[in-house]
Image (cartoon, rainbow, N blue to C red):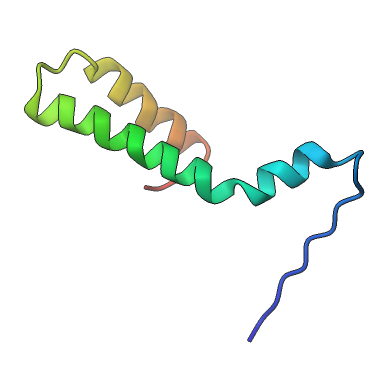
Length: 66
């Protein structure tokens, strides 16, 4: 089994450490936002259709798939 070990020099790299440790939370937040925008676009009034489109453009630019 492969292992990955991340090392951070704290406190200098505290912000990088926080991002690494909270990645799952960020992923869940993006997924929740996606679901909200999708629900509005598909079943609601579509008032966030432009935001939904821009959201996907930004994710694609960063190579993120949900």
